[in-house]
Length: 418
Image 1 (tube, rainbow, N blue to C red):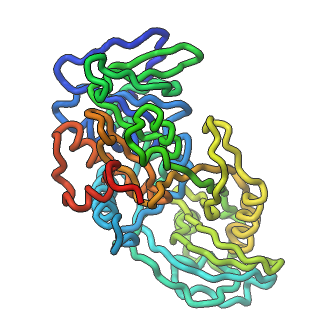
Image 2 (image 1 turned 90 degrees about the vertical axis):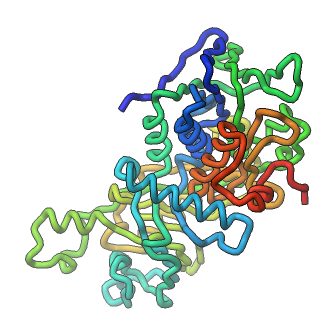
C-alpha cells in the first residue's frame, strides 16, 4: 500500500485542479482523516490535502481509548449519527480492522475494592473478566454486548485511512493562519494559508473543512458570521497505557493440558471494556475507564476536566497525579496481570465540545464552500466515520443522502445558539 504524499513545501502551492475538486482539510485528527477518506471515494474529487500542525492523530484522536457503542446516544440528538457511524465502523472493521486492532467487545460497569488477599475474593461472574482478582463489590452490570460495542486503536485507525487513500491524499505540516477569500466573492474560500517553519505557504482549494478539534474555535476569526465557532471549547483527559506481566500470572489458572502457545494466546486476550468505580487501599474512590487491547496492552483513562486550552498541542502534558492514580488502580485490579505492569505511555488530550453539547457538522454559516466537523466530546472516535461521510456528501454531491434532513438540521453550524 502506497504511503500518502508528505509535502515539504518551501514555496506557495499552485492550484493543481485538472477538473476534479481539490478539498483542503484543516486538521489531521480522526474527523479530518474520515472526511478525507470518504471524499477520496468520490469520483469528482481529484485531491484531498490535510494541513496538520502537529502530526496525524497527534492529539485526542491518537490518545483516546477507541471505545465504540451503537446505542448509548439513543433518545437524543446524536442517535442517527451514532447508529450510522457504528455501522460504518463495523463495515470498515470487516475490511481493514486487522490493521488497527478492531474487535467487538463487551462493556461492563464494575464496582471494585482493593484487597490484600486477592485469592480469597469473590470473582467476577463474567468469564472474560476472570483476570480481575480484587474484591468485586456488586454484580458486574453488562452495559453492552459484542453486537453493540467494539473497540479500535484510534491512532492506527487514522494511519490506516491515510494509507488507503494515498493516491488522492497529500499531507502538509504547518499552522493554519488564515483563509484567503476569492477577491470577487468574500463568502468563498480560494486558498488556505499556513505557516511552516516561519514561512508562509498557501494551498488553493475548491472547498475547505475545519476539523481542528477544540482548536476549531480559532476559525471564528476566519468565519466571523458563524457564531457557534466562537463557543467551541475543550476539556482535558489523562490516560496511560501499560504492559501487563503475563508471565507472572497465577499458574493455577493454566490448564494442565495447555501448551505454551495456548497459554500465551489466552493470557494475551484480556477483554471487556470496564467502566470502573474503584476504592483503593486508602479508601479513596475513583471512576476510570479500562480497555484491554488486542496487542496485549491495557489502556486506562480518567474523567475529563476543564483546563485552559494551550495554543500549541505539542505542549500538552499529562497530570502525574492522575497517571499515578490510574496505574495504582490497575495494579490493585489484577494481582496476576497488572500488579507488576510497566507504564509505557503517559499522555493527555483535549476533547472538543460546543455550547449545547451537540457537534457542529455542516457548512459554515454564510460561507459557500467552507465546512466544519467538531465538538464531538468523548464520542469523536465513534462518530468520525458518519461525520466524514456527511461532509463528503455535502462537498462532493451538494446534498446529503445518508441522513434524515431533520437530524442534520440539529447538527448544522447555522442552528440557533441556545
